Image (cartoon, rainbow, N blue to C red; front, side, top):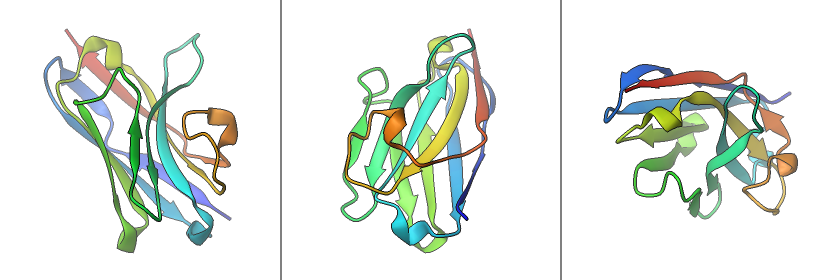
Length: 124
């Protein structure tokens, strides 16, 4: 059974930084891509960033390019999201996700496993 556990959320002032972590356990060898999505209450979950496990290729939503960085630690089966220059608009619950197959990384329906979410709040 696969489990994804996020950590590192919290409250930060605009312009500040946070680092989210996602620890994966279980059958992680089946992962093709790991990604981060975020959701604001009342709105749909949106793609933030993704990383292809074998190649290390990364993908970002336009809204976070240049500010957020996704990275991994293969030995720990973990993926991270470094968030810099945070803006109030980045406030959301951030979810870690993993998918097993080659498919569009920006589409949440393509992901097989999800974490429980981590709240990130950016004050102005």
